[in-house]
Image (cartoon, rainbow, N blue to C red):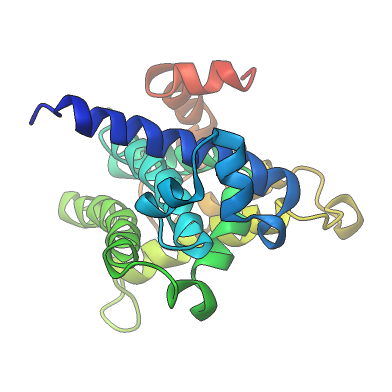
Length: 243
């Protein structure tokens, strides 16, 4: 690994300080009230210094999203090598996504903003490309597990109308959509949903059962698998949430 120079470390630390201040402000006041002037005052740097790192508040927003997406991908990568059969590893991805959401509740609202044209048009091209690459990495991790399941004989997808990419996308959409709703003021209990997290876990396993991904949930305790994932892969994250 390349060693950073003192100047590079200082720049990295300053950028981290700016991102931390902007994240707190975004969570407290929303994107509409986020401004480069406010961020500059919060970190006690000049506005010109802030602009040396980020071209606009939209660019800063994308950088915030990238920061958490990198975290998500690191968590997914750890989950993907969990010691178990492919379906257990996909279950581990689900555990990682739930933990990620609970650790970063503002991320899902941020994601909707960063993928709008109004934001991307004011973002540095390099940062926009990094955003796309990170999203692709998320997909690739899941697709790799599906392909391992096919190669091992645990899963056989229909020759027409389905692929490893489509299955991965469907599971991602289920989690993202549910967590996005849970990040709002939608009254889940009024909708007949007692526990959003438990519902997502159960629906995910139902989808995999429907595809005949072995072993089926009637033959395997995936709740126990999830507990193993928490204990073996994410003990610190779980402890920080009191889990």
